Image 1: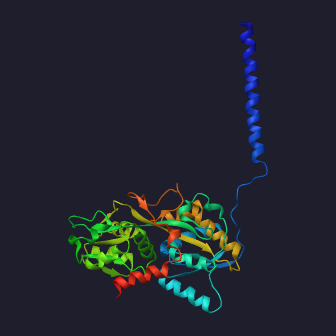
Image 2: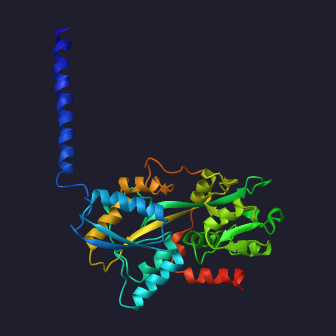
Image 3: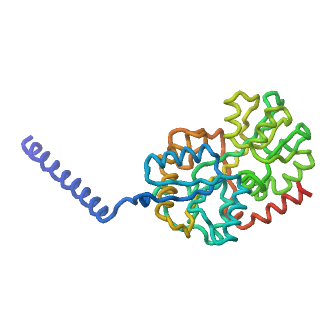
Length: 340
């Protein structure tokens, strides 16, 4: 017993020394490293944001950023994807892009500007938690837009997957939005074009089945709600918003997966207000910015953000890298089917 009683303090002392050594090694390993800090805006600066993102979402994020940085002014030019592309093209013809930040609906629309070296390559501190699928060296996902099926409340049976839209049940009763107008529909075109189960034959089958091309996803949702169509392809946000307002429709999550499209933000490389532009972009990717996005009904791209909708099933995405640079080809193939 005396030996045993003397050995316990000794063992505790050894254990304490080991723990202290481990702690010292950990501190030594961390010495000289610091967590990345967010860019600081220039006080009193003004930046211009070009965006195709929904107005409510832009307002929420700009407002949240303004609360954190009240000395910064953000001028917003917002337009649908096609109209925004025309504005950017006009800028480039007349001397240079007049935006400091681009925040677009889909990665295919912004990839062309990266190819022209118009976007800044950098590593936003707040982008570390974003899935690599939803980011590149120059543009970074902010939210996820899920393309889903929408059906009338009395549709029987309701479509369960994309291929159902090409069946006899829905002849002359389907609507989808124009990929030449809406960025999310452009991304859907890319997904179907690359899919081994669909390809461009999917659009040929829609055409043969009497599907109607409308302008935007909201037009699909409205058309189904009004009974002009039995079903169609729309965004989950559009369908949820309509359902919340009492529209007689159903959101159907496709059994093979909703098409998840990331909405990217980028800093213009030639921006004369680059620090402020980077500050705004990084804020949009941060928890406060993502929380602001969630309040407007979109799924934040950053995992773990409280709020926003929960996916109703599997999410699928195309191989974005394989689609970059093929925008003109894809639209040409589509128009050969639906605009001939």
